[in-house]
Image (tube, rainbow, N blue to C red):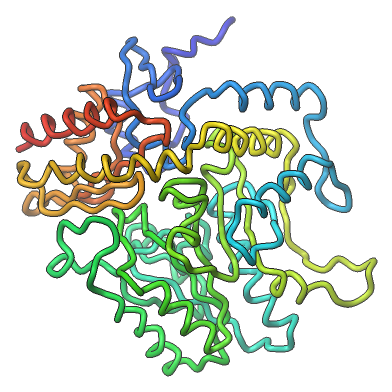
Amino acid sequence: MALDRKTPNDLNAFWMPFTANRQFKKNPRMFVAAKDMHYTTSDGRQVLDGTAGLWCCNAGHCRPKITEAIQKQAGEMDYAPAFQMGHPIAFELANRLIDVAPDGMEHVFYTNSGSESVETALKLAIAYHRARGDGARTRLIGRERGYHGVNFGGISVGGIVTNRKVFGPLVPGVDHMPHTHLPDQNRYSKGQPEHGAHLADELERIVALHGAETIAAVIVEPMAGSTGVLLPPKGYLQKLREITRKHGILLIFDEVITGFGRLGAAFAAQHYGVVPDLMTTAKGLTNGVIPMGAVMCTAEVHDAFMNGPEHMIELFHGYTYSGNPIASAAAIATLDTYKEEGLFERAAELAPYWQDALHSLKGTRHVIDIRNEGLIGAIELEPIAGEPTKRAFSAFLKAYEKGILIRTTGDIIAMSPPLIISKEQIDELIGTLKDVLETLD
């Protein structure tokens, strides 16, 4: 019997991630096709993608070069082991990634997701210090409201309460810096806010409390996305870099969202002019088509492991699908698409238009703040008293019915459209959202 891809006969078996399952299954929202800037719903409507899927489809949907690369690779070699064996495509991709990465990033370790990239980076940081004879450095420092995936290391250094509170004591030896959201001082900021660089000095307090000799790494999102688009205040990341370098602490940038053109440069590290010791990536690496992640690191981090007999494994870590051939082919085609279509440059050129469109919503009903950087934006809504998240979720449902896809976190609407979006489509996205907001209770 052929599978009916538009009307599954039972929704019960699939336990959906980060979803109000009971609400969804009473009134499902099903996508059945996608092309460029639009999804097609099961009832035949076109929905403008205002979120690049989940921050990942930076080049839009069903792009020919990526599709063809996957088809060709699947027919040529579907899988190759990554332990003690290799295949050329993974090595080619690593070189291509280093070519677009910030100066100083020289090595790539493959994973399958952003969560796995974070776990890998945290393990590398601790193991790096141990390899150098500095094994007391095991403490990890994250940030309040940070999002670093959903594995135990990631939620431990992360700072989103709902992602942490039901999973027990988590990884020990973790502390958190304060987040950078100062609404009273930075409301309606355009780009980096003026106030808040001093918040980086909280790292000095944490160092004094625990001792620098116990701290392995600090991990931050250069721009915090999943918590509702919190921008780094001017000078903040530079201060973090200075403090970590002074105390011999590794700095990890989580670029799972900001990587691959989202801010108008290949990576946020280049956009903000701050180079970390390790960077986590995923999402836009394969345009969201096939799960893949990568951790990039400096030669100093990598070379600390290259000791001992040459026949011995240097790092006992990795995944069955590290550098998977089909994923690697998809990633190379994705990088080709970004380059050939100038999508990173396009994002930078569109950013001022995007900013003006977003901030045109100031004064719209329920809006209490707007933030933006590159092709990312957030509209913060005043919560309904006693019912947090409900107003934004209502906006999400109404937006879907009106033909646009937005994303909500708490009472914040976050948008990050594919980098191929046109000015006319920006107008459509923001105009429709304005109509939605005006109808909310």
